[in-house]
Amino acid sequence: MLKTLFSLRVMGLHLLTIVVVTAFILLGRWQLGVFQDSGKPQATTDPAPVSVTTLAEVGGHMLNAAVGRRVTVEGVYDAGRQLLVADRQPHVDAPGGNVSRGEGYWVLTPLRLDDGTLMPVVRGWVAQAGDPGVAVPSGRASVQGRLRPPQGTDSVQRRPEGLPAGQVQTVSTGELINLWSGQKVRNGFVVAQPAAGALKPVEVSPPVVGGTLTWRNLAYAANWWIFAGFAVFMWFHFVRDAVRTDRDRSARSPEMVLEG
Image 1 (cartoon, one colour):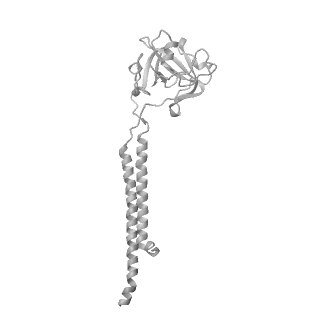
Image 2: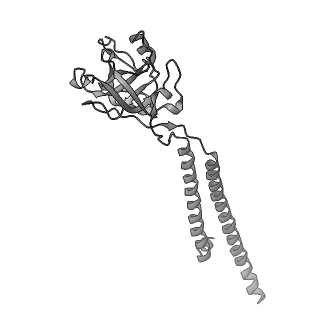
Image 3: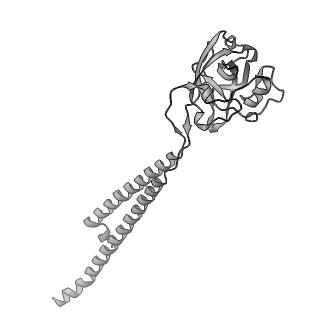
């Protein structure tokens, strides 16, 4: 049996089977990877900026397609209603979709539009509340940035000792409506890009959409692995036949000698 298994023709079959099975397994893993990647959030095309008034309404809901969109907004900053968003890092998105916490502040200033509504604008980030960069620029301002949805008031645990006056924990449209009483506040907020003045920019991701699982690739992966299993079956079948053939030939050899 060992002589048959290590014969030249059977060794060639062993090597061919190893190559084929390895290739089929790798092809299956590749298709499985394509299937897994298809379910991840995918970046979309980044459209040209549009007026924020077309995406952020007063009292309306923000569509998912609007999140992360580049927008423009013009008006005059309302310095008297500026707030600092406490415990923040200089970026919006944290791993796992959580609120980005850190030692610093977002500078949140409402921009009063020509129609009298207020659009909350994160002008930038500072490390200290007393940073001179928080000073509000005067005159008419034209801001470009990315639109973000409002944050929930419970998304960050409040400090046990509370917050100083002029600071908030999240950019919540509902909370801003209460703080800026008597004003019409548009939904969501704009993260200015680039940041205004000496403020550090707050990074924000472009729009993304949820991935769609491509089940076809999963089926392809299963097919390649089935082919690998079939290749092993055929290898076993051919090796078994080769062993049986050589065994039968060896069993007949003495009889042939006697007959001679």
